[in-house]
Length: 254
Length: 183
Ligand code: HEM
Image 1 (tube, rainbow over the protein chains, first blue to last red):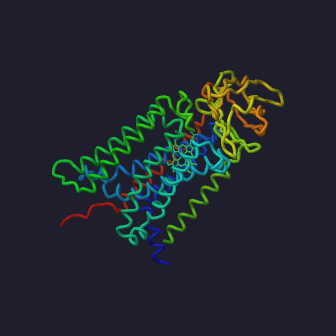
Image 2: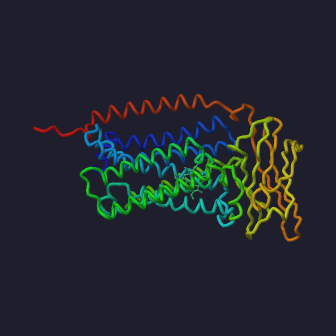
Image 3: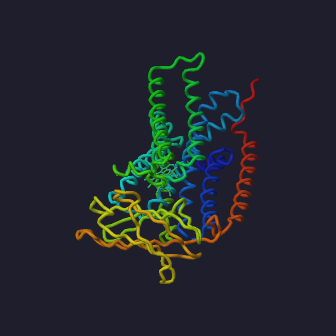
């Protein structure tokens, strides 16, 4: 018991404690902000789930950037702090994603039977649900005890984050309104492009001897990511089901 | 594993609380159902209509048994305020041959809360009739906002800055991330 208490006393000395606090604070503040801007209307709920969704995706990308950043700049200041922060940034991303899912599905969609929804939403929700499950599994195993217990499986499990990002992108491009607009899809392309460039440099750069597995994973990862973005840009360029700039053709298949 | 269980419980609770916070009436980009027919309403471009400005009102229809077809119905859109119909227009398919998506231009004449009604009268005898009512709030400003949110932004910004300062100070004095000095 005294051990536990002394452990709690040490929490404020670490960055994770503040990331947790900030996450809870921002959750409440965003609720307050949307309520004060959009009142009691449902637009407030729509904006709020949107903000939580983008916060979640941004945090995932931030967590994914820390590894390559520390490897590319080995003398960077605060490296141990960044590494320590990474896991809680991921937990925070799962937290915001859960709010996004809860608000959009229960409030906007009245917890409707997914089988009765239009096909475009069925597809996007199925993909989003898998991404959410992955985020929850990763968040649930982001604590030291799970890390020690799972051993090498911890690293294998946590690689699923890359799959989760691809699913989230597909989901967002399929039914999001903002995600297929220039500022959003452009920024996503830039950030994810830079992440890939960093991984390619670290894997294949000067003095590196990439393993076959790494080469295969990177190549296929790149191809699939390009495919997902091609889908996103096709939505942007006027074939979107939901964003409303459709030209017609693909509606036949729905 | 106890941590994981506790965390899972916390997240579930959070989702339930989040949902209960938003029991407001239905509005844009939401689903409504009646008599086995559902529609997702999207007021373009961002579900935030402004008084006096024509906006495209879009419906994505589906039904419980599958195979919904707009050709089986005559769908009428009505904007109702204080029991008076302020605007009315048929909802044609979005393009020739579209079976599940209908769209029409509509103007909310003034600020306030409207009941946006989509009423489907079957022209095919097997199709069930439906009346879907969405509540839509229309703002006056050109940006569709009902408040500025300035206080929320300023106070939130302050609280985050203060938290950041406390964090920096405590972490620095705690020394958890300090490199051990080489002797
Ligand atoms: C079953 C699970 C999920 C459901 C029911 C769901 C629901 C939705 C809905 C209804 C939208 C359209 C919002 C709108 O434009 O009004 C949306 C968009 C989006 N969702 Fe999800 N979502 C799920 C999972 C996730 C997860 C796990 C993430 C992770 C971060 C996520 C991120 C996004 C993003 C980034 C958008 C784009 C928003 C925009 O374009 O403005 N979703 N989601």
